[in-house]
Image (tube, rainbow, N blue to C red; front, side, top):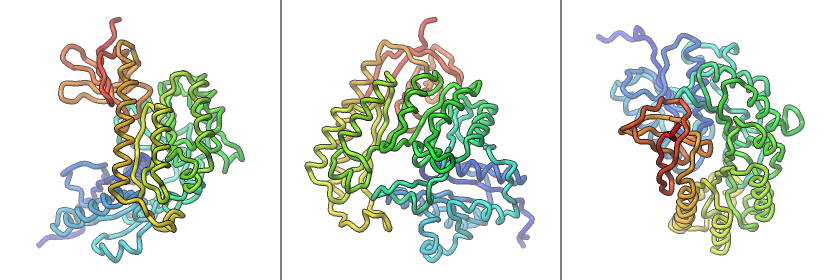
Length: 438
């Protein structure tokens, strides 16, 4: 007869969604380990008896992936492969009551701010002394650093405030201390993230203090790259550009989701700006920070988007020639302002428009990449795979942007090191290079 209760608890955390979720999982991992609980992150076949699924609830595809993952582990529980399945994160925050009824075999559901309650399931306490410490799950040489939680913006299509609440900035001293701790662990690149990084400080200091934060982070010895993500165009603090231009370890890179270009759509989306204002801001960015790489995202098929609106988006992308660009098809999300509109753009048209934008961006990316052939760049080596070293320039964020590919046949490069690489060839979304002659 099987005796229950003797097996030591071993936890595997599975993360879905964005880098902000990944940081939450790393904090969870740190707290579990700090309570002497054996915990891992996304380890396959590691014989964990408890699984915690940190879900995403952003758009339809992400929600479906989360549900499929939950069902897969519920099946594993029924087969006796795991004993407990817990679910946390955005999907759980948003749909907890409905999901409890639909998937009753999940042992417990936790929202985005309920880590202490989750820890109690393991007879563990939330240890405040671990605040600012993190077990990172990325390669040791780079780490994400969340500077704020939630969002105060009124964007019509976005469900993030429903899941993450209002904007709450992390105190500057805490951010700096966490960055110093990460650098002490060997981190060379820190990627600053928040739902709206440019709002940073308004709640705590009654003014936007992102530039001051970046300046203080740039003083940390051993921190080679600081990369800024998820800026909001309306009310963008332009002193950030001054700091970026002045400090050599702040990457000339900015991720600024713009979502659309048509004034009609920007108004419907409640973005608080116009195409002219956006283009003036982009021009200022490029003038103040020569060589800056700008990444953006767009949405195709929002309710009310006409063919003329879409053509204006295409024209905007062609004119402004973004270094990096991604596009989503609109997802009709309950309890958002846009949900009150009829979802009147057929799915096939949404996808057709998204494809057209990416085809245009592919041409732009190829042209911009081909201009790099023959030039040298400082490249951070991320991994070695299939006889090739894979790295990134300061213009590229992990997972989402271009990679620099170097043959491992003739040279040895160490993961986590910087190297001067001469670009020898280019495709639309990758660069090829070799170590520059010394």
